Image (cartoon, rainbow, N blue to C red; front, side, top):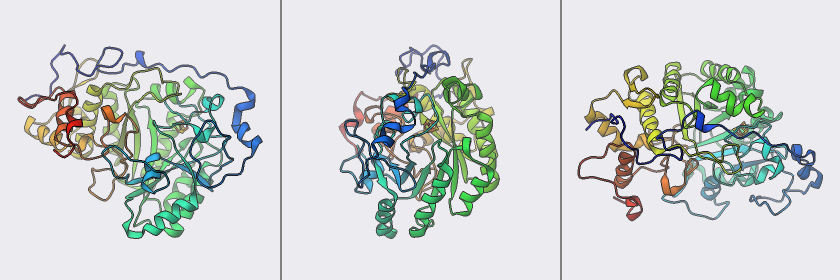
Length: 432
Ligand code: SF4
């Protein structure tokens, strides 16, 4: 058994560009179109000024109510199902362990990130609270209602963590403080620890300190892009967006100083044009700082400036997932791994027996994020299918079963003799 992909071997899961990785050239975003004046800054919603009445489920056919943080937040469909706010079932998941709360305003996020469904250029077609984000709708719910539900669950809550996601908006910091204060007034952060997914562009070091003092446990920065060039192309000047790599790193370093080892991290999206070496080098840099990486597979979000581009081929994604796990949890260093001339991993720097055991354990291929209560390397953030459809799972929101591991091995081109994956195996049974 070898983890070396033979040179010239055909990929079984190639992307639309016929490569087994998304190259920089292939991943150019569209330019944002002009937004009519009448649709800018949430004007439709503000002019109509319809008072909100409890939960709002995204619906592009009705006039969106005038909802604002800190009174309102949006939450993932998975969290809404878990809390009983929405009816529904999730494929092979009974609940989500992380409650993601997203600040909300009629003006929405003022940034224009190319891969994001919440980006500013979408003002032309959808009011903010109706936009899809990481593949699903996000209902808007009064903060007090969410807090009361979790408070009533007490120690029986299924939640392992709550996360406030900031967006780019002038009120983002103050409203994050306010939502956090409303939460901790009724819920012990020891029972449900709090993470902050920050918006560095509008933040200062004092804001980071305040969030720590108010009881948040982990602070993360959504770098998303793995290199400065890619960051600028997808989140900065390339798409008329205000973010800068330097400011993101400044706040990340502040978080390291203030929150401390293993209490800060960065989000990275894989497959936007960086090489596997570049992303794993970044993972190593974060580990060397004392932090963690939280990794997502690029998926072309409907309505975004990258919705015409291919999702990350599973070959590339699995190699990076495995490499990230080895660096984050197994003391392997990126310098010990080998890469080919386009930066693909060709050797993971572990004896094959050890590598086999890690692959078979399946944890490396689960959703990644801040830890929950099961074990350090199992994320609380198991929101399902944020980076893929259930029919071709990128990040497993549950422990992969034997048939899932066979599929993963197939995607890695590391199948065991006599254990070949057959298309659809994982849909046959889920308790193997
Ligand atoms: S700052 Fe965040 S929410 Fe706003 S457009 Fe960028 S990725 Fe989306």
